[in-house]
Amino acid sequence: MTRTPDTTGALATAAGIGLCGAVVEYVVGRHYLQIEWAISLPVPLVWWAVGGAAGVLGAALFLVHLGRGTARLVALPWPRLVLTWVVPCLAAHLGWLAVTLVVLRRFNPGLPGVPLLDSRDLLSVVLLTPREFSLLYVLALFPVLAKLLERVPAAAVVAVLAAATLLTETVTFAVFLAAGLRLSGETDRLIATASRRNLVLRGAMALVGAAVLGVDRFPAGLATVVAGLAALPFGLTVAALARGRLLAAMGAAAVPGYLLLVPGLALADKILLPRLSVQGSAVQLAVAAAEPAALTAAIVLGGIVLAALGRQVRARVPAVAR
Image 1 (cartoon, rainbow, N blue to C red):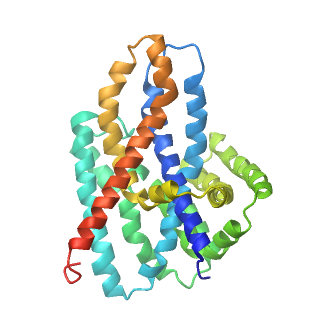
Image 2 (cartoon, one colour):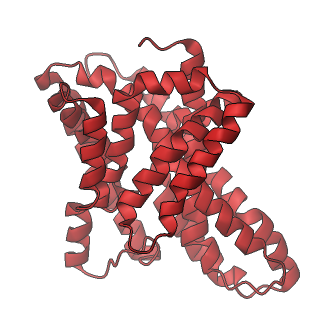
Image 3 (cartoon, helix red, strand yellow):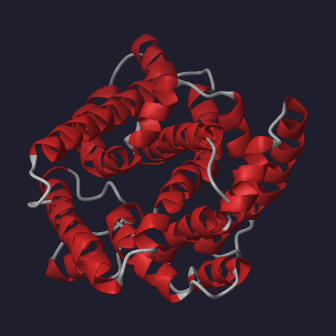
């Protein structure tokens, strides 16, 4: 199905909402809740709930947008796909991973919840990339997988990838990319039928899907996939009803914004965590209310700046060199 301008705008808005959701979840879970709060009001509890809800929608929304964009890559001949996309993306992934691991080892090795104490720990991160480190890796290899599975029914592709999360959570991002690429017709219909009435119905569906996150014995990667897929209709409906240039700009910067998340938060956490934990209750109350939003805005703005710089660099590079 050919995308209309309305669908394109809604998907860009969805990517912006998704980026904000993913950043909020990570900021709250890895930094905000680690502060030793000494306030009586349950503000951290509110942010805990917001972070959980944002995490369900976050990566799913911006990955569906990115997945739609991989259609042009899948259409490329094999040599061109490998040389112009796979190899550069893998090289960028290794470069970004190296910089991120250096920042973590130097300033905040415990932030991602993955031990980074010796060379064996580092090798495990490179070979079995944790989900928060896997965006470029998955983006590099997904078009290859999609090209190999072009003739396989879309539902089967999504189901098999979802089942593969039982082996490694690295595949989680690929599930939502596949949904964006192979379920484009369904995505367009969800956007075209967006209404306030449907918002309520689809919100109820998202809540039912999110319930699996509270089941202790449910595998974490598969729970993330189930909750994310169930929440997609709600998220796309919100995006269709709440379009704006700022959200679309955030969506265009989803990849650099997400890549900035771990190293940026590692530095902020190193500086802020020990200081905020010893502040008085009045200062802590103000920080508790505003800090997640402020850190999220800073990281997203950094992503927008990086995206703008990237566009300028590409514009100055001759077409032959590119």
